[in-house]
Amino acid sequence: MMAENSRKHGSSRFADELGAALDWWRDAGVDTGFSDEPIDRLAEAAAEREDAVPAPTPAVPPLPIGDGQTGAHSSAQPQQIGGEPSAWPSDLATFRQWWMDDPSVEAGGTGPRIAPRGAGGAELMVLVAQPGPEDRENLLEGRHGQLLAAFLRAAGVDENGIYLASALPRSIAMPDWAGLQARGLGELAKHHVALAAPRRLLILSRNILPLMGHDMAQGPHLLTREHGMTRDVPVLAAAGLEELLRSGKRRQRLWQDWLDWTAD
Image 1: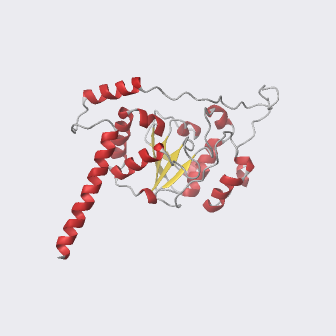
Image 2: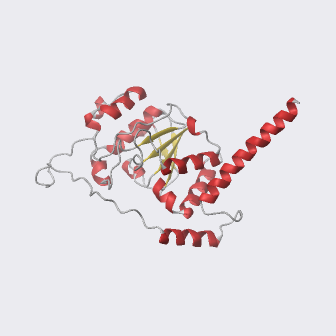
Image 3: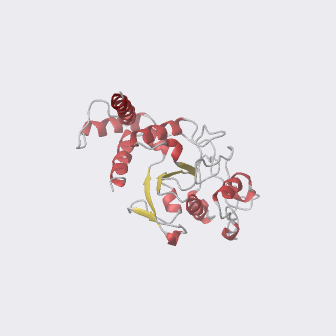
């Protein structure tokens, strides 16, 4: 009886995992078959979808870096996000509260500040550029979170076991990434990763690695003690969730990169 129950449980778990994988591939635009080699019609279909679905048009211009009166850029050093690094919290619990409450963390935007979620020391940390447009209380409440959840199920990763965070505390319509880098956002993001101390880091944004001083075109990426880590953290960087929603081709690329990254 126990053996029979074990077989049933194993079959049910396999069916759930297979279903999750099929859901991810279906979302990625593959719904007729699988192959070890790329299929041209997948790329064609993805291109058609990208042409048919335009990128959303931001409604708010980027915030200028200046004196706030004339709009002219000040020659002074831009105000650092989070203030002096020596004053940043040195433990994760304090950092998370500081992230939500401290005025110095302000980087612009009109939405609410959204807290990271999960526990430190996770096997996987997922870092996105900013909260989703639908987020009000929790990070990635809307369709961005649904896509991430589908990917994690297909990858066999427990969503409740990851550490999820954003580089920006609140959503900004058109972030000035060069200005944010000059204001130290990349260093603050690295400090956050160091405190979270994950085993691996998945970055879903094309803008975060350059903030941290890395080139997206170069890989594999690794955050080391030279970057303030307590241990080496392997990094996989991919397109942001909005791009992934629009492009089956990019979802397919992420899936293949994930398989290669986790093959060891």
